[in-house]
Length: 439
Ligand SMILES: NC(=O)c1ccc[n+]([C@@H]2O[C@H](COP(=O)([O-])OP(=O)(O)OC[C@H]3O[C@@H](n4cnc5c(N)ncnc54)[C@H](O)[C@@H]3O)[C@@H](O)[C@H]2O)c1
Image (cartoon, rainbow, N blue to C red; front, side, top):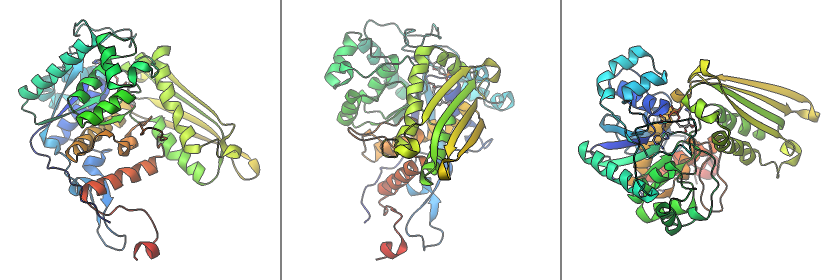
């Protein structure tokens, strides 16, 4: 049965604010400028190129663009801004990141040079390998949060923007476990006033956005909005939230392959994953405390998909190892290498090798864009709190209380598509056969 949920129209200008204007952020911003100038195409973005089936399978030509089903904000009316501890404007930062070719960047130099980062909320304790001077100074973490809120209000006015969303594209911070300070809005706010050590800068930006009812997504594995206090606040202020950690290279491959092995009841004895990368993200992750945050995010994926406790014979003894190695010559062109030891009929062993010569920021940029545009759609549809349908984009998806996160990319896509149908007031598709469906 169709429902009646409708999104309000995507009028005016949408501001996309990115704390952290490094490789991923600048590749996203430069990419959108290039696409709007007709210089490139938005490959990898569902909001721009994704198609969706509407109605029954026996109808011809019922696959339409997602952006024709629901009112996704037009790319031409998007404005970017953000914060960083380095002063470089977006053109300079993109040149430094060495992701996009100089020939393309030079065509975009004028608009990109105009985008300058605001001063960051930064503390070296949380990202040990970085040092920057373009930072705010305040007494308490609550003062910092209020400074970010003032930045947002001013930026919105200066850029004549109607609505704002925020996507964390900053560095991976040291590993912090969820603790008492993260449990309620009251405890979090008290912690902000008392400079509690378990509140990292990424959580200060998240608090500022969510407090203002601004949709927030977290592209790094930091706790950020993935704590009960932030979920409670998001419900109070009507902010949709999604976290955490963009699902790009190796984990994307894992969540494509593992559901296939499980579907065919193939056993897995071991899955060894290693990476070499040489960008600033790689340098940050070279510190063991920062790597730990990423490791935890990467390791959870197989467990949820394969359910070793329920499938002991196939996956009960599986050994899963993930490594990230900083190797400067590769820059942003990461190599993600997997060795998978599988077992087939009569327990005979086989091996699969995956060598993904990928480009980290090229894979991440469409995710930043889609998360921003879908969160804006969610806000205009009256949705708030955790947006599980955006798990599709995330390595370690946030799930509702007591629920297991969904990692299988195909189930994630079904959830995303059905949510769009729901927003559009269309029938949901449950893949029952025609005999049942037609009655
Ligand atoms: N590229 C990918 O495939 C991918 C996948 C998953 C997650 N991520 C995550 O996305 C984030 C960005 O990746 P990247 O390759 O652009 O890294 P990057 O190092 O090029 O950029 C991060 C930027 O964040 C800035 N920063 C750090 N702390 C900040 C703070 N408190 N306030 C404002 N700015 C701050 C840094 O100065 C840097 O410019 C990282 O956390 C990374 O782990 C990336």
